[in-house]
Length: 443
Image 1: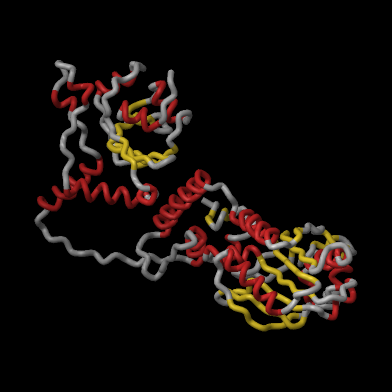
Image 2 (image 1 turned 180 degrees about the horizontal axis):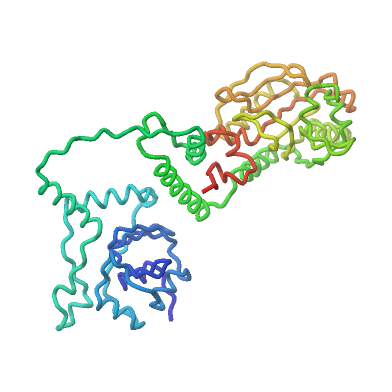
């Protein structure tokens, strides 16, 4: 049998077989370039890919279903004809309408409200099916399209309003109260652009949690169908392309380094900062920064590469950080540096400007100082530090065999993501099993 796409099968049959095997009558079908949005007579609305080989397409081609949907009230004759497993004539029972992508991607809840309002204003008129009109012994009532569940609900509401003449006292809806654990749960389920006021919220915790869980599942499904790119990985690829294009050499240095490297960075065992380092045995540690690797490569490439030497590295770092919205114990760093000529504060600021403009992130530069490098230029975004930049030389350079001017900066990729996508906390941007691209996976 010729494989036809879903929109073609639906237009010929006017039916839909759901995942649980129920046979639905289709009221409306809209299509974009890749997807269909199907509205059933029972009021259910689904969004599916317009495929030729999906389970739904096979079910419609092979006429396989378990039982008809009770709410759709599919006519018996229509069920019999579908069960014959013979091809239909070319009469169109459901018109597949092509609509703009922006309208197609509207939330399902908004679509249902629109359908309900339109049915209230314009009650459904009986529609006859062309394939049944040619049968002389079919009763007229058999060819009338059933009234949808949504319309029945509207009629019931209107009926109750007209029959109940006794005035009802308006009951003031009580404000819902949430424990701190419940608040934390709700906050974890909010999307990046969603806000909530617990003082004004009237839904119960269960209702609110259920609503947000449904929306997050839709977000994850949509993400899987559309892009499938992890934002942290995508940002790393974007940054790599940016620096390679402007003449920087990418390096990859070891994650497990001798603790002696940290002593050269001025972070010996007598320094408080050393308490944040993850030690591995007596002499090794997980790198808390990328600087040792860059220092080693600058020394080795000094007399090999043309002036100025320009390097960058992106990779994981580990530090026993304090809790907070901007700290992680496992995080991803970008460090770039240039050694030799043109190593001025102005050129460093130009580099930072070009980089952050390419990511469309607003920032401001603030003078500061730190224990390792001394005077620094901090790159800030709405009170959050994105980077600490340095104009060398600095005293520790001699311990690494470096005797030339240099400029450099280190950025946390998770903080860049937090700033770019307005994420509520840094955990949504990091390597995590609780979030994917800022969306909760604990559903």
